[in-house]
Image (cartoon, rainbow, N blue to C red):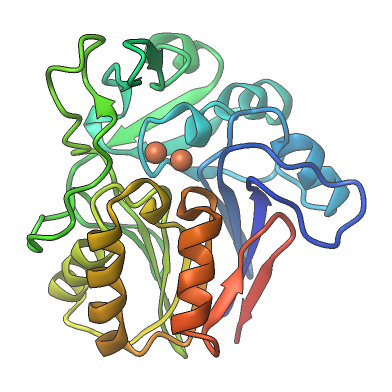
Length: 277
Ligand SMILES: [Fe+2]
Ligand SMILES: [Fe+2]
């Protein structure tokens, strides 16, 4: 299908005057007759940036959350309050409490900032599933991503408890897959499941390996150098045409990806747009 993808929230901004950055991610997918919001950022910049880019979120009906982290889900409340009721897709585990455990012993809560019942009272209608499924014409959620690689060990600082005892398995982490004439377009949230695990999972579910674009957070900035090295090595086999990374990819890993994939690399900052016809 034909569509336009626009980054509304991200850590940094592009050339559109007056837009704001925050640690978070949100992208708007628009097609003829419909639109879907992929993640919502923390909640500080979504509505402001949408207005600056003349994006009307009032008519939007569909929201999908990549996982329960606050920097992807916090914008849901201001969106509901300002723009009215929305159908919200996600994994059943998005409301699981979760934390970053720091070397100092401090724990920071990173989970959904509002309970499910409260958000329902504000107009959210949740549709939660761990399965690969179509949520709009030619747009699918991956569902829970099967872990296959042995090198995507993830972020060591993320836990389900405040003592740092139980690593967060990120069962809820998923990505969005859009079928276009140029191939599959994959929108990531944080990709805690691992980029290669995610691509392999998509390939298994769709029977396709023609990934035209990957857009969003890869979390490679929080993973080991070994994971980055092996991700780069395996990524070569995928021959992705647009590698538009951002958010938790971080500056160093993004610079490495630009060096390794100079023709494909793009910085998906606020205002970045990809049109597919
Ligand atoms: Fe994130
Ligand atoms: Fe995350």
